[in-house]
Structures are given as structure tokens and as C-alpha cells.
Length: 143
Image (tube, rainbow, N blue to C red; front, side):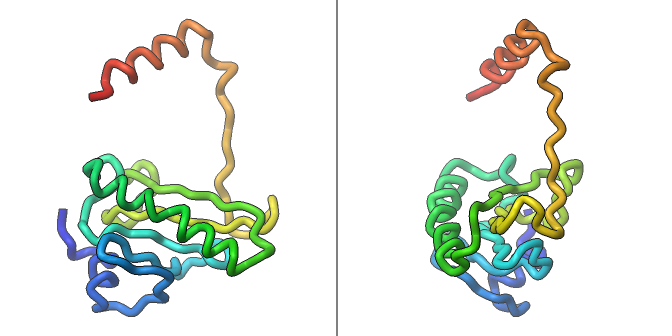
């Protein structure tokens, strides 16, 4: 994993950003796309590609800070009714910067412009037996 991504450069202050929070472990800054007002990225300072490559120590440290930053966003914008917290892992999942980051996307209404995540449910496509088999395969893979 190289630290020569745009996020590595932002963390090193080689590229300016709109800092929201910083400590020894994470750097949080406004996403320039601002899908909704206050859209913030939380990035570990220790470079790792995504959640699939993050060790448990860095993952724990990042996720330990998410509630504090999310609550600060909500406090700053009282009309914020909720928040989407997401992280894309891999090219196929639309990850565009290969330095792990977590999006905090404030939600002001169900029709927020610019927010296109729509769930398509497929639960009816699976039988109880198929779901049991899927769960079993995942359980067997947990280390």
C-alpha cells in the first residue's frame, strides 16, 4: 500500500483540505463533492487500501472515532435528521481512492439531492435453506 494517494498527500498537508477533526490516528475532512452539506471523510493516517486490508487495531481506532465526528456534524446542522455511514471496498464497489476512508453523509430529507444509494431487495429470491447455507459458509470463513 502506497501512501502516495491524494489522501496521503492531504494527511501530510501537501494538499489543502477543510479539516473537521484530527488526532494521531485519523484525519477527517470535508469531501469536496459534498453529496449533502457536511459530507465528511474519516481517513486513517496509517495507510491501508480499504476495510478488507485494515488490521483490527486500525479498524477499531477508526470506528471508535466515527460516533464523535458524526455527532459533531449533526450538532453543527440541527436540520440533519440522520446519517449514512459507508465505505467502498474495491474497484467493483466504486472505491475511487485506494486509501481506506469512511463517508459520513448527513441526511436532511429522504429526497436529498445527489444521494443515489438505492437498495434493491432480493430477499424473496432465497429460500430459508439457501440463507442457512450462505450464513454457514460465512461463519466457517471467520478467523
